[in-house]
Every structure is written in C-alpha cells, then in structure tokens.
Image 1: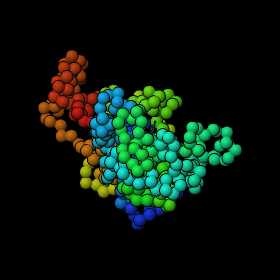
Image 2: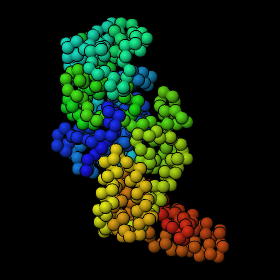
Image 3: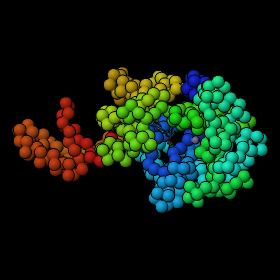
Length: 450
Ligand code: AMP
Ligand code: ZN
C-alpha cells in the first residue's frame, strides 16, 4: 500500500517515494532548550512520533533525527538571567524534555544532535556560501543573499513580485529585507558565547544550524522534514535556500507541518504567556497519556483547541478504553480486514482519528469478532497510537479486597451507609478503589495510570 502524505511543498497529498529502497530519513526541528516545552511543542513531537510509528508499522526502516537548539538569543538571555552557562541550561531543559517524551510514550529519536556540537560543520557551509557568492559580510555578521537563491520562498508561497517587494525597505546594511543572518559576529550582548571562524569569531544563525545537522546526520537530500506550521517561513524556507545553495541538490522531498495548539483563539506560545506545560497538566490530575489521547483525537493538519474540559473528556475516554480493553482475554489473532483498513487509514495522510473511532466500534459494535481477536487487533493499532495498552493488564484482585467489597455491598443493601463508607475507606487505604457501575461494583487498583 502506498503511503500518502500532505507535502507542504506542493500543497497536496502525494505518494511517499523513499530515496533508498524502504529507508526513510526523517528530520524534525526540535526545541530551543531555554525553558520547559509547552503542550503546543509537545503536540508537534507527538505527531513526529506517530509518523515514525506509522512508517515503522508499514515496514519502513526509519532513521529519525531531532535536533536540540542550544545556542541562540533566547538561550543566551536566559543563561545570563539564571547565571549559568548555555551548556548547563541546555542540559537541564533537555533532561526535562526527555522526561516528557518518556511520559508521553514518545520513542527517543535515533539521533539528537545539539547545535553547539556542529559549529565546525556550519562554518564550512558558510565558507562555501561566501565563496560561491550566496553570502556577504556586514559589520555585524554574514548574511545570505536571497536573490541568489533559485525559487526562494516557494515552500511558503511567498509573493516575491518586484512591485510588492519594492514597497518594503531594505534595512541597514542588508541588501534586502529578506536576507537573513548565517553568522553573527561576537558582540558584548552574547555573554561570551562565540566560536572561531575564518570569517570572524561569532555564533551561528538559527537556520544554518538545522541545515548542517540535517545534512550531517541524514545526507544532502532527505525524505521527510517536519516542524510546526510556524516554521514554514522563515525557518524552513531559509533552510532550503542554504542547503540547496551548498549541495546543489533538492534538500527535502516531503515537508510535513503540524498545525498549532490554540488557546482562547490564539496560538499557544511562550512569548504570549498563554502556555501550559506537561507538569501543569499532571499537577491538575491528568495523566500524560490522556494528553496524548487528546492530541490523537484531532488530525495533525487541523488546529487543536486546548481546554481543560476537552482534556477531561480525553482522560475519561482513555479511562473507558483501558477498562474495556482490560476485560478482553488474551490468545486471539488480529482480524485481517481490520488491519487492512487500519493500514489504509495510516496511508491516507495519517488518518489517526479514524483509527480511534474504529477502536470504539470494534469494542462496542462488533459482536461477531471474538473478544480475544478484538484485543489482538487493538494491540496492533496501539503500536502506532502509543497509548500504552500493552501495559493494561487484567488485575488479579486480592481475596481480602474482594471480601471487603462484598461486605460493602451487603452494607449498602442494608442501607448502612456509615458502614459502607468505612469499608470503602479501608479498601482505599489498601491501594484499591471500588466504583459503583450499572453492572455492579467495580474494583480498580488506585495507582493504575489512565
Ligand atoms: P520551539 O521550541 O518554539 O522552536 O518549537 C519546537 C516545535 O514546536 C516546533 O516544531 C514548533 O513549530 C512547534 N510549536 C511551537 N508552538 C506550537 C503550537 N502552539 N502548537 C503546535 N506546535 C507548536
Ligand atoms: Zn530547524
């Protein structure tokens, strides 16, 4: 089955054609590690993970790389504020990020290059750009001349019509307002963060960092590059211009962009101060996997409105899913037609919302599928969803807890509410809970993460 993905370059859904056999080389723009990731960032990373899982499920050999931006203006400003080095700041927030990944069941990318480990490669790229006439020097740095780039701005569908452009003044020493910094010369503002280079000591611009790390880890032309939609312009547009000017080859075959997480009608972002972290989410009683379920419930190319009510809905749905799943017996086999439809949905621009809906139908509306086969089928689906269903096991409830639950039921029948409440407290103190459902009392372990 052909995998079809929406390619931002053509603004259409295209068949994915790997450069090498069944190998997919995929690069994701990672975070700038000056602070905690917010749930908007985490949505983008969950989408990356779902894409990797999708491709691996479909038997591609995926090489996944996500960079860490550990040198830029924000890093320098925050390090100065906290009185630490950018290295220490990066270490701290990279560790927090990887802890979030673990909690969200995001597979660790095969490579996580840090920009500061790649300065030498960036310098070599900039030297080539200067030598070939794509870059020029001003008093504060080295700039890329966008007029030298073939098809500059095509990813972002920029209108470079001269009549429109001429109305925008070029600034300072830059030849055009669209020219961007490849390198910033050392200055008093950079707090000592500067590296040697043949063209002058300083530090790299953000865009060249990704061009270098993508090429170094995956090659001159890569299969898939992802990021949030905010990166289409200028970041990805400028990555293309630099990489193609240096390598004289197409940089990326398929560009995949994740839409924003919105809050009160605005993009969630640190600069707007409207962001929420995973830490806040868990402090408010939500499990990280509920957030993952919440993200999977909206197609990656649609905006996702973050509200606590919606997250509550996702948490309840996941809880119900775990409960229903837990009742299914082992020993079945996946249903071939279900797997075929599942693959079809994945190949259709990662139609994960269809998969979630189908799980509910299988659980509730398919009496002809034996329960054990339902379980085996849903477990296959979860290889891509990553909701951790493989860890959801039927509990063996200790006999003393069963006896207490029975005694409580008896007390309830006799309308002895004081006694029944007391027994419930005792059950809780032993690490279990009892919930009254339509089908009678249900005993659940308290520490089960749902
Ligand atoms: P940053 O650390 O800001 O460079 O962002 C890391 C990743 O998160 C990038 O791929 C961004 O495009 C993405 N991102 C940032 N804000 C949002 C948001 N509100 N919703 C979804 N993705 C976002
Ligand atoms: Zn990037």
